[in-house]
Amino acid sequence: MTPLSTIETILAISVAIGTLFTMVAMAIRWLVKHYLGEIKQELKPNGGGSIKDQINRLEVRTERNENLNTESFRRIEKVERKIDDLYEKFIDYIANKK
Image (cartoon, rainbow, N blue to C red; front, side, top):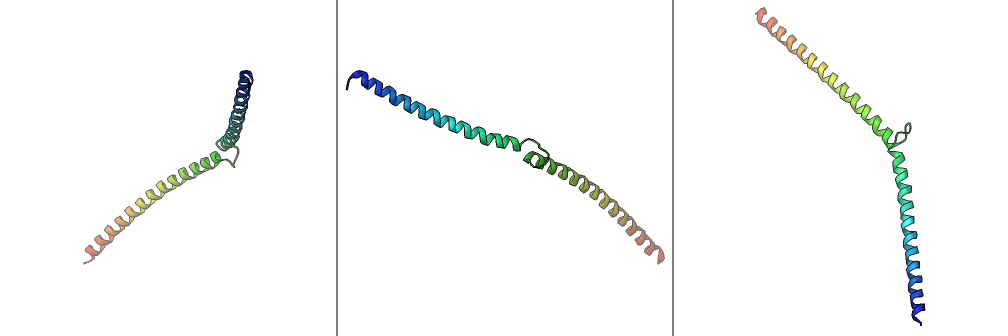
């Protein structure tokens, strides 16, 4: 084997390895871009089916539930005050009846 053919062989192997690495890198790039594109679509509102839309609906429901809970607690406190007032009036009534 002559030195020139050895250099040609080394260069040919280097080009082949470089080509393989480039092909693998491009395939990985395509896969990442493809899957990130799908994920990106899920993170944008599209009128109902995306994760973003579902999170927005959950936030609205949670806020509505919090408002209902606050209103319920106010009503319960109001009823408790009325019961306490009626209890005091009942005790006064019984005490005055004797």
